[in-house]
Image (cartoon, rainbow, N blue to C red; front, side):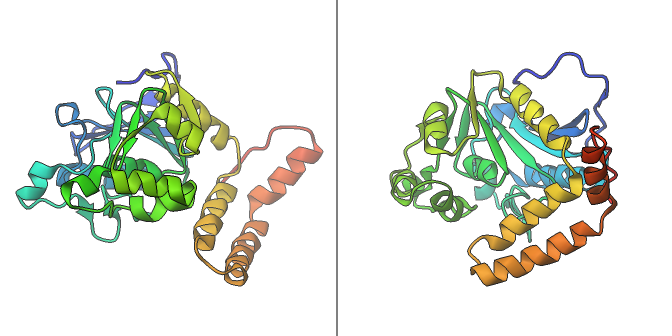
Length: 270
């Protein structure tokens, strides 16, 4: 498993009913680990259910400000568990998509920490996150066309929006993977770091996000998602609704007061 900070005062690991998905609280972040290393963290029904529960845990706890999603054993995820799928298992959660994530709008920032392979649905899980930290030797790919399939967990929809169309289509139509280093150059990854450092870097990014107002972070996500593929007048109307609600919050007053008093704000999330 990628390294994590050795000394963190608030670090507990509650029991998780899904052994293939582990959660660990580190400060104000929730580290979510896909833990099927022998299957390269391929997603079956149990993993999808476990990941959905972990995301619910992140959303429900006001003490948690951000999540980090990673995989155990040096691999992020090999995507859909084909053997389980052939046996009739579904890797999707109704209304929430592949792995319980790809069609879910998480209210809090979610960062993918990608070591090793992020293939097919594994790449799509990463694309469903808000930020991606990649190991320089990681491998991102959407090989579905090689199996007579399409990247239906968001890959064919999201990737052409994230990088230039022709580059996205090359990955989608050839099914060939790219390295973490190349992913950084394409703009797929926010940070590219040496192997073994992705979780540490992602947690550092999560701490930076956690310093900001939680209601503002949630509003930014809502506005960005509302604007995706929406005509500008409708996007601005959605933004006005979010900013009006935000303006009435105690956190906005606290932010302005803290600025005037030259101190760090104390966010209440209300």
